[in-house]
Amino acid sequence: AAADAADADAATASLTLYTALLLSPPCAVLRYALAFGNRRHPKLPLYTLLCNALGAAITCSVYELQAHYRSRGELSPQASAMLGAASLGAAGSLSTVSSFVNELRLLSPFNSARYALVTLLVGQAVAAAVPAVFEMVLPD
Image (tube, rainbow, N blue to C red; front, side):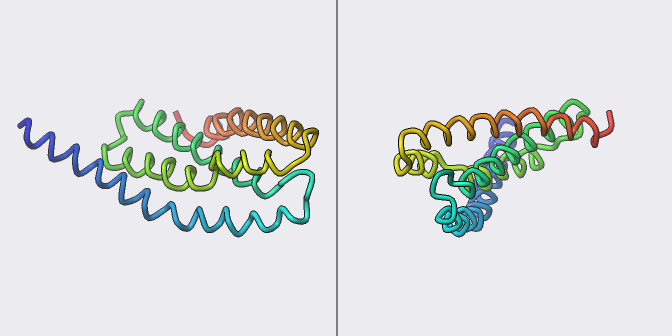
């Protein structure tokens, strides 16, 4: 029985890893492609901000889905692994700290501070809005 449980845990971990590996490249390419739009906004990198906000929305959505279905006893280990992979692969590739720090480094001190503050506020707004939307959409 212990060996079966270990095999199931290994299979779930592999599912998470492989799904994250499938989701990461397209999201990294999207982030890279959108970054070219930042040239039109030299004082505030809107497209990096968009990627960070989208990554935050994905992460918050995954959390809300896992919490909702786990509380109802309807979340299988495989579904949890797939949701975790979405957070790890997609959100992780969209919202990289290195891109954010690089943007801060390239901006003037004033614009850097403004961008950091806007990013923080947008992230907080997303973190507040996603649970509210899920509260309206998902039945109890």
